[in-house]
Image 1 (cartoon, helix red, strand yellow):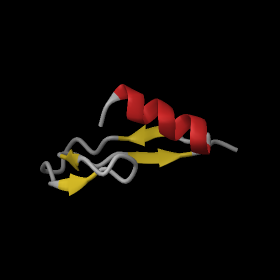
Image 2 (cartoon, rainbow, N blue to C red):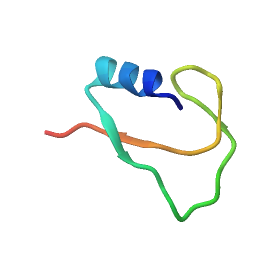
Image 3 (cartoon, rainbow, N blue to C red):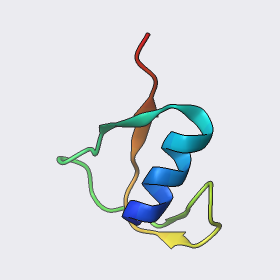
Image 4 (cartoon, one colour):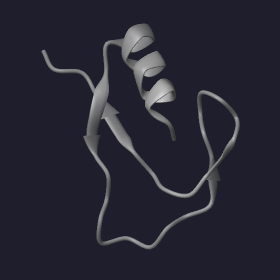
Amino acid sequence: GTPETEELIKEQTKATVRNLPLNEPDEEGVCMVTGRPSQRRAWFARAY
């Protein structure tokens, strides 16, 4: 993803990145926000 996509998720959901798995192989996928191809998985969550 991009910093712009991360900011958009934060604005829309109040969630921030909590984890970028380091010990897992890259995984082809699709960004849930932009629909563009992605290489890594990012975990977002909100703090309460």
